[in-house]
Each structure stands twice: as structure tokens, then as C-alpha cells.
Amino acid sequence: MSRLKQSAKSLIKFFGLGQVVDKSRFYLQYIQQKENIKAFKAAHPDVPIPDPFMIYETFRLDYQRYYDSGKADAMHIYEEVKPFISLEQKAILDWGCGPGRIIRHFPAIIPSAQFYASDYNKAYVAWCQQNLKAINFKENQLSPPIPFPDASIDFAYAISIFTHLSEEKHFEWINEIYRLLKPGGIFYFTAHGNITRQNLLDNELVQYDKGVLVERGNVKEGNRMFTAYHPKPFIEKLVSGKFEILKHREGIAKSWGLEQDVWIIQKMIP
Image (cartoon, rainbow, N blue to C red; front, side):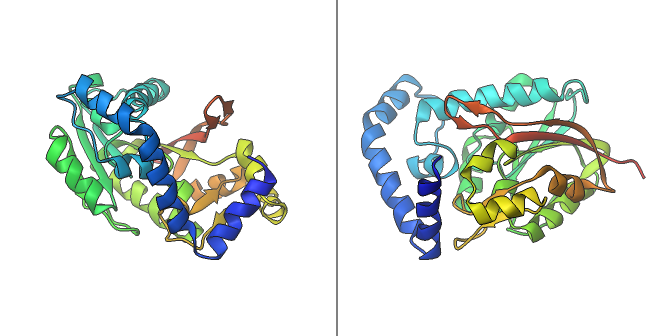
């Protein structure tokens, strides 16, 4: 993404116009995708699908891609953590599940596991509770906790959740994940790494290259337009003393955009 475009985005956020621009972009995409949405629903009458704005907020307004990518991502997570944990008969948590794009596919991949999910958006949680019965959904707030017991989860994952949180919330939530995981439990999460340096403005690059988290605020924290960028030293500091880093895979440029980094960490046994 060009520096000019990034500067324009920063100005939009600075003047508090992010929500207005975002809504306008949604309506434009909905008009463009309306016939495709009808076609998907007609071809998949038994597949529960969220309202268009839910999909737009959490992914892209493309029903087929929402469904197919969720299935592909679930399988990819399953395969990528296989060297570190068997997920058979395990308790699995999707933190920041949104309208269930990924977690909805896991019961078919691992029928013997127990599935849990949470999100701070009441509408998402209500929709998931009504439509995805094989999973135990709970609402959380912007700050912890998630209403599950201590040491009750074997494996947790968070896809593009830390990317929308402040530094303070990073530390609050990594402590919460530590609380929820069983000793030796695994946490898989994504973050904006080095490949996204090209999105940063000059002053942000200075901060990033010092190993400091870069935040773009002026919108509600947790919103998709609140953005955080994660230099490797920051993540290492974030997990230090509580988790062992098992894998760090840097994101690369893809046909659809810039891939986020993947981190796989393990709760240390006291």
C-alpha cells in the first residue's frame, strides 16, 4: 500500500471520519456483491450465513470467500500446530471468533474435540449461539476475562485480534490466555510483522524499528480500523516468562494482500 494512501487513512482517522467512510465502503461493496450473495444463498440453502455487515466488518463482503477461506484457515491451523499438539479430544478456544468464520469448520475436522469461542461483539455472539450449536460461545469485553475456568483449554487461537488492540490490552490478554490454558497448552496467534513495514509512515517506521508496538488509534479500540503493528522484539517481550516460543513464521506478500505473521507459543509449566 502506498505511503500516500496510508497518509490519507491516517488523516481520515485523525478527523474522526473512519466510521463514516467505513459505512460508505460497506454500502458500495454490498451493491457490487448483491447478486453474488443471492447466488450463494440459493446454492447453499442449509448453510447458516451471517448478515452482510457482519461479514464485511470481520473479513470481506464475499460470501463464497468467507465460507471457503474459513474452512481453509481451520485446516491450516490444524496442520500447522500438529507438530506441537494433537487436537483430538482436546478443548479448543477461538478468542475473537467474530461471526464464526473459522471455528464453525473445526467440528468436522476434529469430531472428538470440545469447542469454545468468544467475542466482545454481542451481535456476533448471539448469531453464533443461535446458528452454530456444536460450539460453546461466550461474550467477553474489550478487557478480560473470558468466562471460562482456569486451566480449562488445551489449545487457543486468535486470528488478527492483537492487530486491533493497544499495548496495554496486549499484556492484559496474554495474561488471560495464560490463565485459561492448561500447563503445556498451546496458543496460536497472528500479528502484523515485517512484511507490513511498507504500510508504515516515516515516524511509525522509526518506532517499529526500535522494537516498539505501533498503534493507529482515533477509532474505538477493537474496531477493525484500530491497527497495531508488531516488531519481533515486542512479541518476545510480550510472552517472556510465561510462554515458550515454538514457532514464528513471517508473513509474505500474497495475491490478496500482506499475510500476517504466525506465532505458536506454549504455556510454561511452573
